Structure formats: C-alpha cells, structure tokens
Amino acid sequence: MNKLILLAFSLALFSCSSKPKQEKIVKIDYQPEWESLKQKEVPEWYQDTKFGIYFHWGPYSVPAHETEWYAIHMYTKGHPIRKHHEETYGPLDEFGYKDFIPMFTADKFDADEWAELFKKSGAQFAGPVAEHADGFAMWDSELTKWDAMDMGPKRDVVGEMAKAVRKQGMKFIATYHRHWLYAWYPTWDKETDASNPEYAGLYGPYVPEGSFVMATGDYPNPPEDAFHQEWLDRLNELMDKYQPDIIWFDNKMDIIKEEYRKQFLANYYNKGQEWGKEVVCTYKFEDMAVGSAVLDLERSRMSEKKDFTWLTDDSIDWKAWCDISDPKYKSTNRLIDFLVDVVSKNGAVLLNITPKANGEIPEGVKTRLLEMGDWFYVNKEAIYGTRTWKAYGEGPQEIVEGHLSEDKNADAVAEDIRFTTRDGNLYAIALDWPKDKMVIRSFAKKEGLLTNEIVKVSMLGSKEKLNWKMTEAGLEVEMPTEKPCEHAFTLKIELK
Image (cartoon, rainbow, N blue to C red):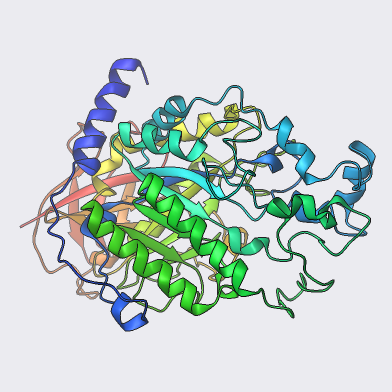
C-alpha cells in the first residue's frame, strides 16, 4: 500500500477499534480470594479486541540457534545445543549465558518504528516479553541489576515500547515468564558459571540437582517463599512503572504458591481502578481460577464456539519463538485463516514475532505483518468489535484441540466459512476463494439458523453488485470477477 492508503488505514483502524470508550468502572475492593477476584468482568474494550502482537527478544536472541530455550539447553548434558554452544563459544565455566548479555546490543532498535509496523499490521494491542525464563528483565528495574537498562542494550525496552504502543492508539501488553526461572539453570553444577553465587541475581537461587524434571515438567523441590515474593515484587514494580492494560502469563505459574498468585491479581485489579481503566489478566491451564481472568491457549485453538472470551498465542515461526538462523515462517494465508477461525469462536490472537538481537525485524516477518495489514484494510469491519453468531461456521476443516497442537491442523479450503456479527449485520468469511459461487449451507431452511430476511449481500472491498439467491442448499452468491484481497474473503449480509 502507498503512504496515503496506509494513513487512511491507520485512521480507519483507530476509529474502528481503538477509539477510547468511557467505560463505567464499578469500584470493587478486590481481595486476594478467588470469589472476590471472580467479580472482575472482561471489559468491553477487550471483547472488541481481536489481534495483538508481542515478541520474544532478549539475550537468547544473540546465538539465534534453534530456540528461545537455548538458555536451558546449553547447560543440559548430552543436548545438541550444548554441543553447539561449547564448539562455538567454549566451555560453560568460561562462557555462560550471562556472557551473551553484552552482545545483546539492540543498536538498531526503534520502539516507534516497531509500534508503527504493529499498527500497520492491524494489531490492536502490543508489547514485549517483559521477562522470559532466562531471568533477564527487559525494563528499568530497581530490584535487580540484571536488566536491559543496566546491561546489554542499556535501554528501558518495556518503557519505550509502552510509550510507542500507546502513541499509536493501541493497548499495551506485558508478558511475564519468570516462574520458569526456578531450576532453569544448573545452579548445583560446579562445572558451569551457573553455580557461582556472584551471578545468582540472573541464574536464580541455588537448587539441588533434579529440582526440575523436564520430561514430566515436575518440581520435586518446590521453591522457598523468597522466590515467590521476588516473583510478586517484580510484577508490582512492572505495574507501578508502566500500567499495562494486559498482563499475560506463561504456563507453569502453578509453581508459584496460590496465595501469591491471588495477591497479584488483587493488586493488579485494584491498581487498574486507581489508574481509571479496566485491565485484563490472562492465564493458562488451571493457573488461575475459572472466571478470575481470561483463559489463554498456546499454539492451539478451540474446535467449537465458546460462550466466554478467550485468547490464543502463537508464533509467526513454526519452529521457534525467537529469531533463529533458519526460521520457517507461517504463510500470511495461514495466519489470517487462523485469526478468522479463532475470532468466530469468541477468541482473540496474540501473535509472537522474532526480532534480531540488534533490533531489526526480519524482512520475512515484516512482509507478513504488512500483508496482514492489507487484509485488515479491506476486512476490518468483519473482525474488530464483532461477536459470535449462532454457529461459528461450516466446512470440512476439523480442528485438533490441545496444548501445542496447531501443527496438526491442515490448511482451510474455500468451503470453510466462518461467521461473525456486528451492528445487526452478519459476516460470512470464506477461508479460500470460492471461484464461481459461494454456497452457505448453514442458511438452508432445514438448518433453521437464519431466521431474518436477507436485504443485501455484498463483498467487502468490492464495488460489484452480487447476484444471490436462497435455495434448498442454502444461500448461493456469485463471486465478483476480481478478488478484493489476497486471502480470506468476506460477504457482508445485511438482515431485515
């Protein structure tokens, strides 16, 4: 798109999805008890929000090898990443994870440039991984020297992104993975730098060997209270400094004692009221009580429509969550089809991207984000601010549910159609081009789903008048002679 169109899109996107709503906040004194925390309702602005972007970016981006879990695998005896590390950088008592930090320069990082790209992609919220499992905080922390302001980039990445994201009219999200730090590094292993107390601020407290069993995900030696308190203290600091609209948690948060998790939620919800805005927290599995926060899935989606608002996070790269030397990026078509399917089932998508250690966003990532923006420019009214219909859709695609299951799902076809509603209109989105005509079988009389009379049928992005008719098979619509966009195609069905 040219600059004039991009400007028009940004203005339309802002007016369509990011215009501040003066939501009336009913004052509640949240207590650190589940029944109290369940009083927190999902705000309307979040229900209107369908697409966000975050990024795994930290010292693990420096080796850019295989995975963001490089930090743990480089210390795992017999692991191929350890072999790669020792051959490339040397023994672990001479070159440990801490030694990547000075190499994490971020010299080409431009928060405004990133936020502008996210906005152009169609995102409504965005933000960083505030702290990954590696123990390195990406904000200006008073609680540790192992942070991006004191080391590495020597910049407040979280603070810069919060300002830049909000300047673009988007909501700000901060994601938090610190609970994974416990037993992440072999602090018991004297053959590595992780055992040196001098680096405990990064590598975490001493734990006996076998405190984390990777094969089962179990922790035979749970952390002491000091670890739980530091987890909470850093979150409190993150909240106080940056007032995130959304705080997102990775799974395994159940390693943190329940009393600390409840205290965090109470703190966050009460602070949100002090800030005068509705905030949102997400969780995975059973790490929070149902109804106390928004459920989030990882690399997966629901097979059916849900009556509650949910989120899913996935990476733009099939292989990793951080920049690696040999990425396998998803196609733009796959990313858009995934988004449409999720939205039709009352969900939203948080897409992870993979910046380079120097602060550049790879061209393959940029291209896909801008192509998504092109699609949103045409189809935004069928996504932003929408709600679900009686059925989420129709078609042969069968979704496999479950943690990390997305690679088990085949690409959609033209017969796969998804529904959304907004302002009394119904939108039918075909996940591939239907060629001559599109047949919506859910509208057949025998289905009994469409009880309103159809007044008009048009295709978003096309000025052509469409011929359509109701038949025993359903609604048949002749396609325009030219495609209005490159990916999923939306019929706007105006009802009486």
